[in-house]
Amino acid sequence: MSCANSRIKTIAALVGCALLITVVHSVLIAPPAEGVFAASTECADGIDNDFDGKIDYPQDSQCLSLHDESEGPTGKGLFVDITDGLKTVKANGHMTYTISLNSDREENRNIDVQFFIPHQTNLISSSNGGDNIGDYVVWRNVTVYPGQTRKLYVNVNIKPRAEQDLMVVAKVYAEGEEATDITRIEGIADDPTDQSVPPLRLSVSDGKAYAEPDEKLTYRIVVDNTKGPSRVFRLRTDLSVFLSFINATENPRVDRSIVEWGSQQIEAGEIREYYLSARVDRGAPDNVAIQFKVSSGPSLAKDTTGVYTGTLGSTIDVSISDGLESVVKGDTVTYTIAIRNNSNNLATEVSVNTALPNYMEFVSAEEGGQWTGTNVRWVGLTVSPHGSRTLRVSGRVRSDAPLGERMRASTEVLGHVAVDTTHVSDERRAGGGGIALAPMATTSNTPILLRKTADRSEVRPGDTVSYSIFLRNTTNQPFHNIAVQDRIDTRFMQVIGSPYGQLQGDRLSWTVPRLAPGEEWSVRYTARVSPNLPNGQMINNVVSVSGDGIETLSLNERVYTSSMSVITELPPSGIGFGSIFVSLTGIMSALSAALQRRKFFL
Image (cartoon, rainbow, N blue to C red):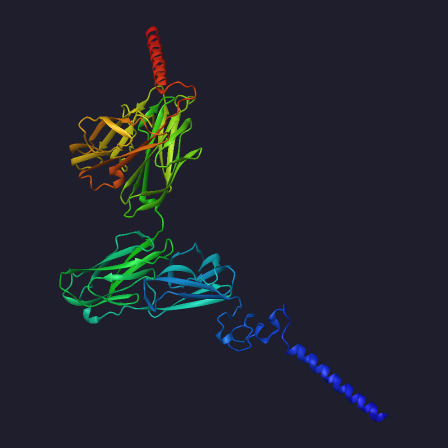
């Protein structure tokens, strides 16, 4: 019996050991059940299991952290880098730091970024709205997208008295990550044997204050040796990170961003010129400053060009005028808005906002002007370099406008506001003291060279229209051999009266031998509308001017386009168009006679 009990105990012990081994195996070795997060593995426990100084990520379930770029000290999947692209910099030099942000996460994330401004530098600017707070530039809620590098830029100047061989240390911090860039300040070694030789004088310019991304810049570098002896020199420039080299004269050596002309000979009293072309990077941020520096020994010259993707308000002038001093109730007033582009670049996406006066009803606007109920707006206009653009908007003085009321019209373009004021009176008077034949801008900065008016804005089939063309010399030089051409769409109308004009095909032409500065020329002709035109048909014609002295003016000033629409429906009363005209004429005649009798009895 005791032997049997011993066997039973032995079997029980063996079964217990087997059960214990099974439980231990299931706990320590078996993989987690499906749906359970793999944080229980040693490679995903948030500890540096592979001793590489980086925390293992939960995704690193294969213990491959030595090759896993998603590791980091913070375990947040953010990677930060900073560089100025330079090894050395001179005192009073310029540097642009590029901060790169990357994320290995699958979702977008917003982070705060801090840039430490080195003590040897002065902050010039920062991109993307970075705020200068003490010794830091701070960006709030910078969005970093998966699989994309987000870049921020900081421009600084080295202080003029920064000591040689000091280290310029810049740091960037984001979400616990940090990166460092170190640049050494190099000195300018003086050659004691050349102390009596005056240094070369350098200058450089691309002729522009602003440029657009992807624009080509051509720098003119001048080396002046008018006060020195014949010598051999080297010329060098380090291109900005926002410039890509295209070509240069005199075959320099090009090594990435470094362009160097070696062993250049210049004679006593000589001036040499070099030209270098480079293209602005397409991704250059708005408002960043591109600095181009060129040096030769101790001589240094630099040029700064700002990057701007829109139209600068400082390059635009605007004026508005109705050419009138006073108006009467019921008058139709046409305002002329003149926009001047003073830059070398085409002005694009220009918006114009014009507010009509109180006691005035909107009538019409040219070139797509939209009435919003309170203002007239033009959106997406272009103005040629050193050219002007003319817009017109018409309104009618309301019958309840009080006498003496100041009719104030204003227009706004890129922050510039122009105002015109006209008084309500019992007599219509032109601004110059005479009858206003047509509105004209009175600001000398934006004069109107060419304009055309019609005696109506809508016509019926078979009507006769009277056109007037005005030309004025707005320069201080005379015009000679002037040719004025008006292109008529002969499908829609026929010229029936044109004094001195020559009609050839669809062109009606006049010749003006000479036009002195400030002098005006005008002509009037009549045309008959085709009787078969459908309702709503638009009739366009274009008048242009050319001649000696006019070719320097912009295309917008030398060409004028006008249009009118065709209406065929009769008024609701059924009275014919001619009958309405006769009736109105009779009423006006009767009113005039009554006024004359009233004056007589008074």
